[in-house]
Image: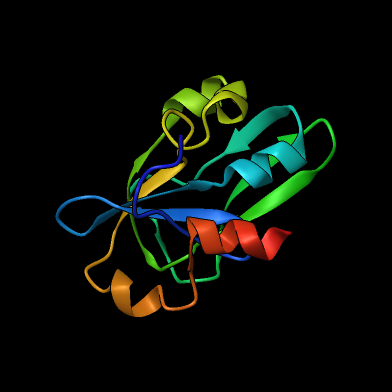
Length: 126
């Protein structure tokens, strides 16, 4: 199930606003489907800072390795250790269980202007 209010980048990352300027970032269901069976996930360390568009993670599947880009800049406040140990979670649940990182960004709204609402994102894929 797709969470309400989710925003997607054209490079297939999603951004979901939480509370207190904390945002969850992950891969869209479309990206996960295109990758196939995911076998390895490399995530940054908590405390790392990234700017919008910078590579922050790597995901490897049986088909290919993919770099994952920040949809907005921010400081990593949490990483999903579960998917490092069990990367297949990404295939099973990209939105609920398979998120990648949580970032802190007080100004994410200013940086998210080029992100698409989920329905618009899906239309662009067609």
